[in-house]
Amino acid sequence: MRILVMNPNTTASMTASIRATATAAAAPGTEIVATEPLWGPVSIEGHFEGYLSAAAVLDRLATLDTPFDALVMAGFGEPGREGAQELLDVPVLDITESAAQMAMMLGHAYGVVTTLDRAVPQIQDRLLTAGLLQRCAGVRGTGLGVLELEEDPERTVEVIIETARAVVRAGAEVICLGCGGMAGLDEKVAAELGVPVVDGVAAAVKFAEAVVGLGLATSRSRSFAPPRPKVIGSWPLSTHLGLGRAQGSPRNTDFSAQTSDI
Image 1: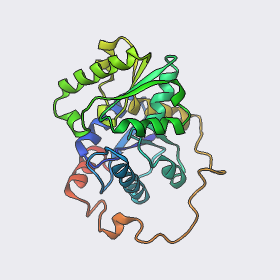
Image 2: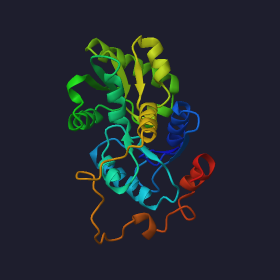
Image 3: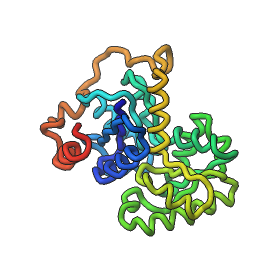
Image 4: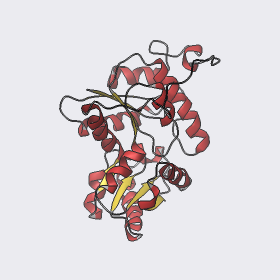
């Protein structure tokens, strides 16, 4: 089984961290490959960048030439998953719903710790649309930007723990890490909090393995039927810009060759 994990931003170091977490969570025999869009924002902190990223991710998926059995989208609360479900014939899971679904199996109420406060409404909207907000005790930002998460790892963990404690006091019995850039920090946070901490990347990988293992896939009967054939000007954009495996930006080309061989 091969699972593709898609980092929605273009920061290759973050993709590498996400890939490491996904690989650690995967069962023997599951191959993890990871990549990021060929264009788009270096981090996603708001609706504008979120929708740019969604288009960039779909563009990347439309031009990817490697086979995979499931897709994990590693952006927390960001748009685009439904488009990928229409585009692809394989199961598509995102870390937002996967984390919340797993958290609800572990406690009566869960909470989310994310990056900037401006991301809170976006995550709440995503959980509401998914029907998962009712059992959410709170979503709270740490005040750290996405790229700041990598600058001082020890300080990042301290701030996440401090924020998570406030969410636990508000009634959360389980904590979800609300950013792909927090991948791999769950054990350190859980050791201090004394409650389960769910890493969305790891949760999505395990759900993907289960769905593929059961021989299931996205229903194509209605909501996620394939896109209707029509002319879309300059699509895929990366092709028209001369991007791709051979001609992509140096950062993305180097990343793919070194870590995912895509």
